[in-house]
Amino acid sequence: MKLLAVDDEIRALNDLKEVLAEAAPEDELATFSSPATALEYCAENKIDIAFLDVEMGRLSGIVLAKQLKDLQPEIHIIFVTGFGKYAVDAFAIHATGYLLKPARVEDVRRELTFIYGKRIHKSVRVQTFNGFAMFVNDHPITFQRSKAKELLAYLIDRRGAAITTPHACSILWEQDPYDLKRKNYFQSILLDLRKTLRDAGIEHILVRTRNSLAIDPTQIECDSYLFMEGDPQAVNSYRHDYLIDYSWAEFSMASFEYPTKK
Image 1 (cartoon, one colour):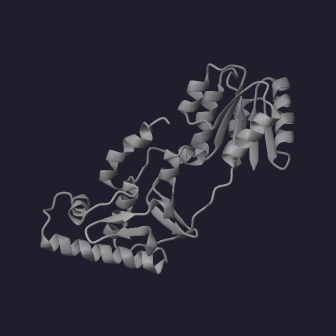
Image 2 (image 1 turned 180 degrees about the horizontal axis):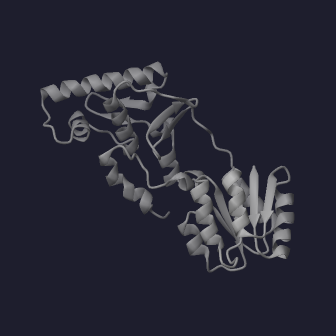
Image 3 (image 1 turned 90 degrees about the vertical axis):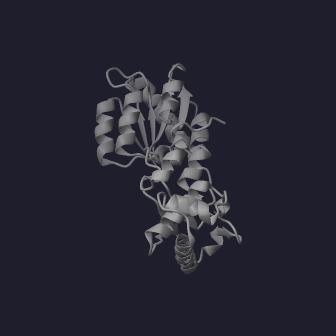
């Protein structure tokens, strides 16, 4: 991992450097007393986790954190400050952690464990942020029909809730009436989707009955599902871009803009 520490107080920066060296001895660490210089460094170098003071003169840690996320959306931000009053502002920008000075080795280790704790990765991965895509063992799946891809995206959006054929048709063809012709066309779309998934060896993610269709959410790893679980990396990767190619996804957008607090 590549770590960054920024504090305009040299003594505090040195203390944090010692703590990080003990908590994560195998990780690469860059330290800066100037937020502007740290920002320039991050424009050229990938950083996994940034430990930032909050009160740092003209460029505060909160502002610096926003700028770092603009440069590197997946970066994890942990604030290390002597004040508790900034916690609300910190978590408003989806900070991963908030530590009070002086940071202790055990506190830093806890945060690192939280970020890089072991997660069982599933072979099927779905991306709903920044465009819809599906991967099997990190290989992208190609869809022959755009409507088959959209149908799968809607099933992902439903998170296991079943839909009927008329329901699916009302989503895929919003303005068109549901009739026998539309029903038959939907069946051809469904067959195409099943073939695509079968060729990839993952048709089992579909749950089919005579009158309904659903996705089995336990069989996939999905960024939006992880977001709802509070996964830091998923939260940090969200840029108001959930299933942006589909107008019906606007109804689900509020779940990511204003997630329910657990």
